[in-house]
Structure formats: structure tokens, C-alpha cells
Amino acid sequence: MASLNVGNLGEYLREQRRTAQLSLRQLADAAGVSNPYLSQIERGLRKPSAEVLQQVAKALRISAETLYVRAGILDEKERDELETRAVLLADPSINERQKQVLLQIYESFRKENGFETSSYEDEASVDDSADSADSDDSADGAGSTTHEDTAVDGPRTADRSDADPKQPPSG
Image (tube, rainbow, N blue to C red; front, side, top):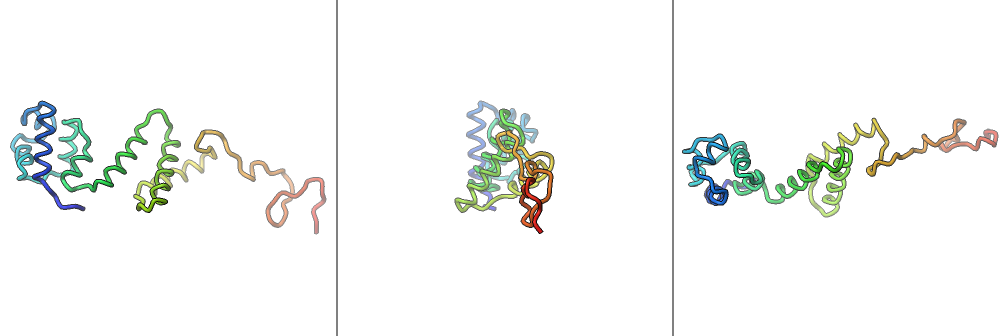
């Protein structure tokens, strides 16, 4: 984790507050923090928690991850990865299964390009295995079949391939 740079954070917060045309008191009320506390954050005298930063970000209508990066809580690369995931998960035009497949593809590309994978991949794998137990649907929604689904009821050879039903079993 990077070291906290509260001066830079404070300047950034003040700039964002002024851009939003909010007084210090208005932002403090909207964020649910005290006016003196917010003033101390802006002046670089206080180190806000991630929770406080999230409340302030919501009040300013900016990304909490941006504030986390400014405060040194989150690495820039981590923020980009989180934002990518958030956009995928928030898309209402695709279903949950499709979202999980997209996250898996995203992780596989990150691995291929030498980036370490996050715990989100593990969560996606757990979700995927639960979905697989319920359904054999592929990512595009079309049903897929397995070898067992198409197998003819009858004897199998030693290598588990289907025996020809017209030929008597050998041996």
C-alpha cells in the first residue's frame, strides 16, 4: 500500500468541491461528516478513512476509487481493474452468467499479458462451478451438449467411446 499523501488529497478535494459549487458546510452535510473534520482533511491535517472518502466521493458525485488513489490507499492499476470490473458488472444489457464469463475472459487476458490476477477470478470460478452444476449453457446462451448427452444407450468400449450398436461386442 502506498503512503498517504493527505496534502495532495486535500487540494484535490477542495478543487472538486469548488467545481461542484459546494461550500465546505454543504459538502460536509451531504457527506455526513463534520464541517471542522472536512476542513482539516482539505488542509492536509487529517487522514480520512476509506469509508469517509467513499461518503465524500458520493456527495461530490465522483469515483471513490479516484479518492483512494489520491489518498494512497489504492494503486492506480488496482483502480483501473476495479473500474473495469464495476462497468462490466453494472451493465444491465447482459445477464449474470454473461458477466461472469466476461470477467473470466478479462482475467485470462490479464494473465496472458503478465499481470497478476486478483481474488475476483477465484470468486468468478466459484460462481461458474455453481452455474455449471445447474446448466451446460455456453456463454452465448445456446445450449451445448456433451459426449454423454449424445451417446447411444448401449455398451461402451474399454476407452469409453460408444460401441457400434449394429456390431456385437468383441471379447
